[in-house]
Image (tube, rainbow, N blue to C red):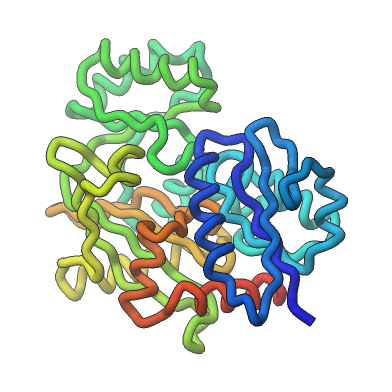
Amino acid sequence: MQTIVGVLRGGPSREHEISLRSGAAMLANLPEERYDARDIYIDRSGQWHDRGRPTAPERVLRQIDVALLPLHGEYGEGGEVQRLLERFGVPYSGADAFGSHLARHKVIAKARARDAGFLTPDFRYVERAEDIEAGAKDVIRSFHQPVVVKPIAWGSSVGISIVGGYAPVLAAIRKLFAERAESVVVEEYIRGREATAGVVEGLRGETLYALPTVEIIPPAGDFFSYESKYSDETKEITPGRFTRVENEEMQRIAKMMHRALEQKHYSRTDFIVSPRGIYFLETNSAAAVGLTAGSLLPKSLAAVGVTFRDFLAHLVNLALGR
């Protein structure tokens, strides 16, 4: 009998469309001879659909053996879905609700990176809308300009801007709160080369297998923004053209942050490689990692000869064994 694999995609988040694409890639590549793949679509209002028809989550969850969660954005990364799956006893891919929160909250992730002894850009945390003006003034006094303004918990670089000067920083923070960001972090801007490194549990007999680094070269004048992530203008080189020491250090940090942030099955950690050292930016939980044909993790897998089909079969086994 085939294993029934529910692929949950979409969801009420800003990354709905990207989640659909990652889920579609999973559905197209799950080995048909081993798995009965079920496309479980969650619309922007949070309504679940099975075989194109609206349904209640409890109805569909009683019919699947395991769930894969390419649910980028708040819904899949905030822990809500994970708690629901645990309530119905459905094993699933990726971190649990607590691990998802740790990776999603950029300040907590940075604190854990510092505790582990890694470099991470200095920052100021604007937790409430009432603190916007005081926060902007503190940023101007504390950091060289420009700075990086980020929502505390959104993914895919949604909402990130690089701005300089009191008025632009103030406007950028205000804009994020107006768009209902939970809170905002403002980081010092580190000049350097962007990179990422993925890890997969249990691959090729290793407890935690480090994939090759990827060097990310955005279009001139841009960073790895939401727009450049999903365009053909960004160059991605695997393995990255870094020194052996730099590559090995990024792989080491990726492994350590996977554990420090209590991740599960696979994750991907982002860096800036600068003359001052390697800076940890964030770790993307499994739900946050893009899995489209053009995404970074599939490219890293291909670079070491692991097909996407084999990775998905491995992932199902990991989820069933959690």
